[in-house]
Each structure stands twice: as structure tokens, then as C-alpha cells.
Length: 248
Image 1: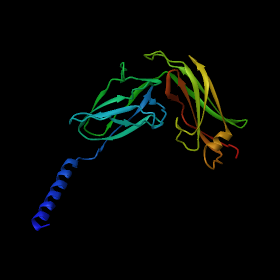
Image 2 (image 1 turned 90 degrees about the vertical axis):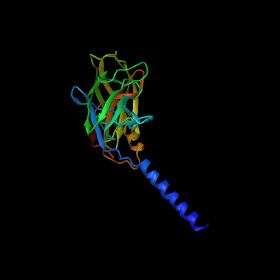
Image 3 (image 1 turned 120 degrees about the vertical axis):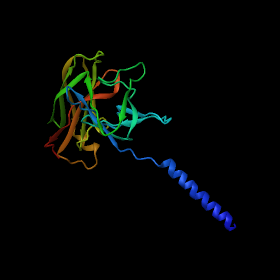
Image 4 (image 1 turned 90 degrees about the horizontal axis):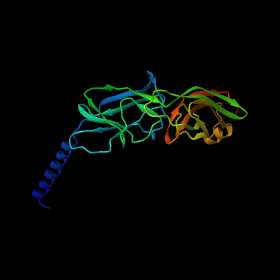
């Protein structure tokens, strides 16, 4: 290969590299879009399982078409997502049935309406929800070799849609304070509540021990949830409570 060909190839490689840099020369997402779900002004306790998605946000303009970005909501109802600055976005909900209603999103025949978000700087945005039922007075005790979870369930008045009946209670017991529907140790019990009632679910201590490797802990983190009719994937959750003094 003569010198002219070598010089030509080198120039072509440099030009290609420069062109690639031009195409990729975009700032990384740097603005924080954050907030929380609220009910009556307080944090709305949520599942927290990454697989139980709530929000989808789509970037508009530039001929851009994609499936959007899923924004995770944690156990406390809080969320945050890094996005590009000075851009318009469309925010909507997962096309699922939820056991609660959003004030800001109206359901359609398929999916939900969307909101326009113009991001000029870090933005906090809270979203009010109304659950079909409340889960309160959550307690845990250890009785007869069982971790017993109890709570009270009551229908909420004033929802736009009629509340489905409660069909299951689900108990979750974990070695860590992250407790959600993906927790390994769980027990489900069929129940029937259309207005209000007391819920109790027992988790054998042996199940808690065997669900985790080398689990000789004298404590556990517990949570209870209720499932509504025809809403099989999203539940209404209690807070997370630590029980101590479990026998080894």
C-alpha cells in the first residue's frame, strides 16, 4: 500500500470519528423530576416492587418515537427520575387497573390521559390518589410458632368508581426493611370484605426461616396488603413494621 493510500485511509478514519462525536455530542440527563403519591396530604404507601410500575414518561419532538421511560415509585410513595433539560414530556400511567384513583389522570377506554411536563429546571410534582380502601392499625405478634399480621380495612367514600370487593389478604415477611410484593416469604389468604372488616394472616416461623439462607434472625420486617376483585397485580399496602424477639 503506497503512502497516498495510507494518508487517505487515515483521513477517512479521523473524519468518521469526528462525525460520530458530532452525532453523540448530547448532554446527559441532568434534571431531577421528583415527587410523591399522596392521600389526604400524607405519603401514600405503595408496593415498591420495581415490577409494579406506575408512571411512563415520553420525550416529545425531534421525531422521537420510543416506549417511554418507566418511573419507579418506592414503598413510601416517592419517585425521582433524571431527564434532559429544556424538553417537553408527556407523562401518563401504566395501562393497568389500580386499587386507587388519580386526581390528575382520567381513564380512557384504553389507558389514561397524559400530562405535558416542560422541564426547565429540577421539578417537584406530587400526585394525589384516593384508594378504594384504607389499611390501618397494622400490628404483628408472635403466637404459637406463627408470625401473625393483623389490620383493619375500611372502604373509602367519594371515589369516582365503585370500589371492588376485597378478595385476598397477603402477608409479607422479610429479613430487610424493603418489603413489597416481590418479597420471597409471603402467604395469601382468601377473604371477603365489601365495606369494612378485620384481617388476620399467619405466617409460620418455619416458612420465614426456610425462605432465607442461614436465617437465624430474632427479628423480621412485616407488611400486609389487600387484593381487590379484578385487580390481580396491584394491591393496597400497610406500612412496614419490625417484629423482634422471635425464637431461634
